[in-house]
Image (cartoon, rainbow, N blue to C red; front, side, top):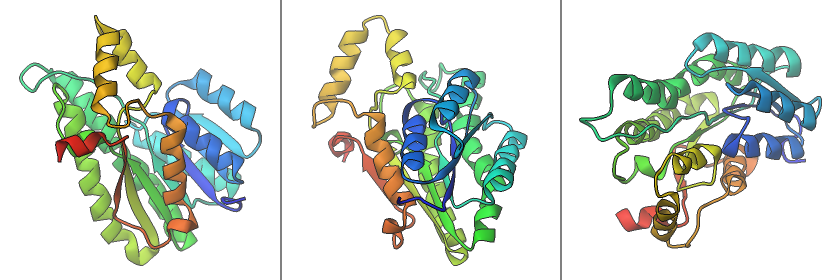
Length: 252
């Protein structure tokens, strides 16, 4: 049981990549606390996975919610070893058309939300004498795509934040890495397709953009996250690892 004796927190854990992370960590012996704003899906997942998984409704835009998640990890499971920063939103609009509310929502969730989670949870890793943080960035933090300036800005900043925290936390025994997925078939992306006039044309064009010829699945990304969080990756920190079906190669 790879994660037996380990306590993990996951933000945005009710659906998509986050949900797959919760399932993997629980299946491999970990004790998991996860947050999400989708209370119905989160509660159902926790109920299905049993006593070693705890859910609380939490919004990464509220520091108090992330502090509550950290407290739950400590009071229920005795501490914390691994942080998975996953919660995100995707709102598009070119730079002179996106309004301030949409811009602020993306940055506050996808960047500042990661800071809030680490602010609340890293002290528990320090008390353990070390641990691991895995941040969800995106290939959009590495190369440009039409019409996503706020999302790209946040995901690019996560790359810089990951590298900086890897330096700052190394002496505390805390490794910090990031995963940069390509297009993954998550509810967030499904919503984008639903709101597009010619959804099939968009899906086909995005599929063609990946040299491997298809979208990724949440579990494929979660497997990489689990590796980076595990002791198998004990000499890896400050890395940005792509899981993108070759998508970013086209932009290099």
